Length: 149
Ligand code: HEM
Image 1 (cartoon, rainbow, N blue to C red):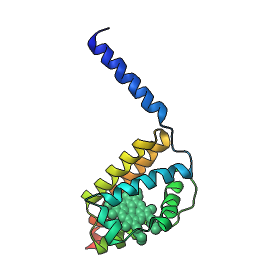
Image 2: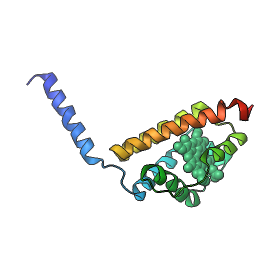
Image 3: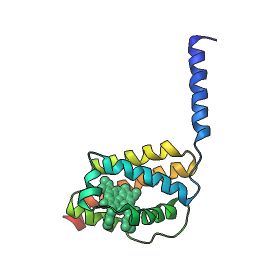
Image 4: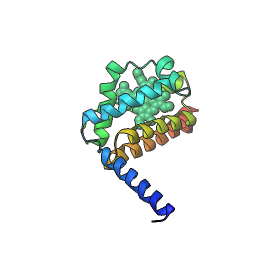
C-alpha cells in the first residue's frame, strides 16, 4: 500500500469510528442534551452571551423545558409548543438589536453543538430548522419594512 493509501484508510476508519459513536436524536432527553450544551456555550460567547445574561436574563431552570417543548414540536412532531417565537424575539430586539451577525453566530454554535453529540436524519433536520428559523428571524427583525420602520 502506498503512503497515500495508508493515510486514506486511516482517515476512513476514523470517520467510521466517529459515525458509529454518534446516534441520532430520538427523545426529549436527547434534545435537552443539545440545549444544555448549547446554552452553556451561548452564555459564554463574546458576541451573543450578553443577550442571555444582561439583555433578557435567561433563567434556564424555567426556560429549558419551554425551549425543549419548542424543539420537540419541530423534531419529534409533538404539538407541545404554541407560543409565538418571533414575537418573543421582536421584544428582545427592541431592547437590544439582534443583528444578522448575532443570528449567524447563534446558528454556528447550535450546529457545532449538534454535531458534537448526534448524527442522523433528526440531527440534520434540527440543524436545517435552526438555520431557516434564524433566516426568517433576520428578515422579520431587520428587513420587515412595513412593521418595523
Ligand atoms: C442571536 C440570536 C438569538 C438570541 C440573542 C436569542 C435570545 C433569546 C432570549 C434572551 C430568550 C429568553 C426570552 C425571555 O425570557 O422572554 C430566548 C428565548 C427563546 N429562543 Fe432565542 N435567541 C436567538 C435566536 C433564536 C433562534 C434562531 C431560535 C430558534 C431557532 C430561538 C428559539 C428560542 C425559543 C424557543 C425561546 C423560548 C421562548 C419562550 O419563552 O416561549 N432563539 N431567546
